[in-house]
Image 1 (cartoon, rainbow, N blue to C red):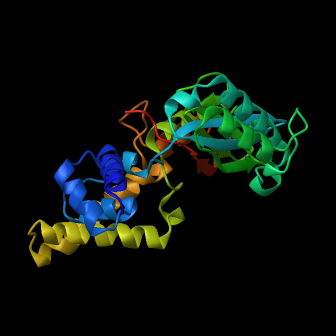
Image 2 (cartoon, rainbow, N blue to C red):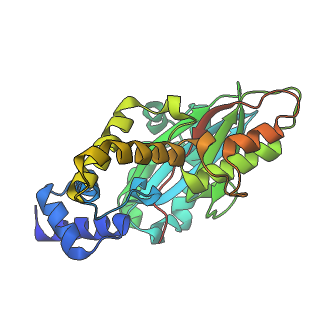
Length: 287
């Protein structure tokens, strides 16, 4: 690995973790430049704490939403710099492919071969755009949500309608008795801020919990905690991890005295409001 790449990875790790240069350099060296393993290494050493920032994708660009007849699609397009993300040609390209993405139901394979207004494929237009701007641009990922549930969204750091740095969506089961717009929009805003990785504890993958418990225990060992106390402390820390990362158990951002599940219950006047799937495609936010 070249010195330039090492320095770039150290800088990236520092931005993500907030840890000093020397510790980041050691972590990068010990883990052959792997950012995720370096974060885990620092956490086990007790140097870095878990944070929402650690899950951010180290890229610039935009996320775009398109909606029609209750169905919604989201597409993320990455650029190397934030300067390009504000370029008019880049934005125009992203907006047009966002519309096509909805028609393709979020299928990236068929998206690339789809024709744009100039009768060239998205793939051909992307190559031309890269050549014109002189910077790597990639269509990273996309999602499609049908109208079998009710989709509510929130755009953070928006450049214009349905175009921004973060777009979150929450899907609520259709409810004939209650108006879900207010709670749906507020939940989408909460998700953008708090980045839940699951709806409730039962929805968390076992491997996620096992890895978190492993990190917690190793951190406690490295901090010198007594063996007979480690299991008890680790259990408490894991419960906090679950609470912090599951939507229903998170503290409500608009009233810290309540949890999300309490707020949803308050809004459920006639029929129970059910969250089908919390979703947060995102790209790196500027510090």
